[in-house]
Image 1 (cartoon, rainbow, N blue to C red):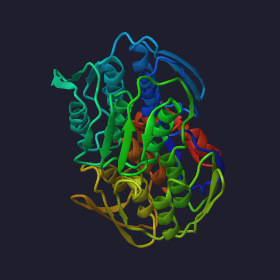
Image 2 (cartoon, one colour):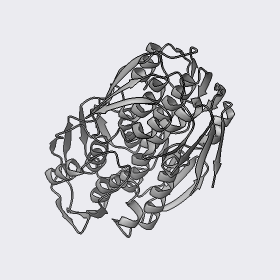
Image 3 (tube, one colour):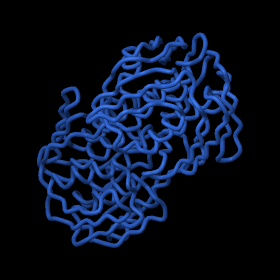
Image 4 (cartoon, helix red, strand yellow):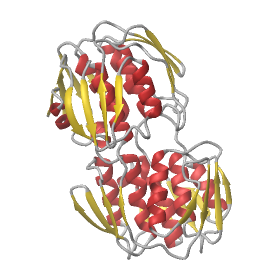
Length: 416
């Protein structure tokens, strides 16, 4: 199993390009199930989760063609509307095939998904929404089984803000009879990117990006071409890596447009951040100032950036409090950061981080995707050598990580 070996103490400097957003690409690729016409997607990141989803779509009967960052999907003949456990056990986003399959085929069997062990992320909101739209839904032998002649529009209120739930129900509603209103909808930019793709296919959607989304169903959707938005979490991760090392970098093919909360905190920490049209520049001070963090749904501070900020607070001047309000099990990286010498105390959903002068290299273990990123950042600033095990988590969400970091001057390599 591959490991990442990092020799710390190098200040990051230079330029690198940001990839397409994994969290936008996954639902958007699933949207191809809604039409019999070919779909072309550009700026698709080359990640393990994307590979898994494309294999899943292929076993359903979708014709898949890939040329680097361009993917073409032809779902004209879906002959197996099933997502088996062995294909979805490592990726929670597999639940996103449920809504499109039910809407297009009238039936779907989707295994309850797996993914990162960061806490409970129940699919009951997806099921409740489909039931309100007329589907008969049962959960049996680990599978969600939904059947309906045709979905009908309904007023849906989610008990909690759920990104995948909003995306699943929005896709399902595109082919439903009548109007569907999703209240308490997620407002994330990835939801807006999916809505833009669906509108290009002929869907009638308004309100994406707000907490009330309206979808008027149509008889059929067309093929289209759509470019995946830049990955805001990858962007934020590289900004944090540069900040922690006292570096100066320029990130291209991205924007600060979806990163206000992250950029504000980096500036509070002492960084100079300059937004260009399709790029971001960051210059960090010799040592950062610790910043308090509280995660909340977009547009507030993203839970997917919490671990990275714990890493930079670990070497910042002063103490900071981090409150995690989204997932109840998302401080697993704290123990690994402590192995590197970080001063972190955990009390329930709150972490208190007291910055130290320096971290020391050690062998640590990645526990989930974003935790992996925090360990990389810590390894970049630690004295000596850091070895990160179980980096398959990183490969799920960061394209060519070691290559991009090396382009910025980091001493990092993958070892068996």
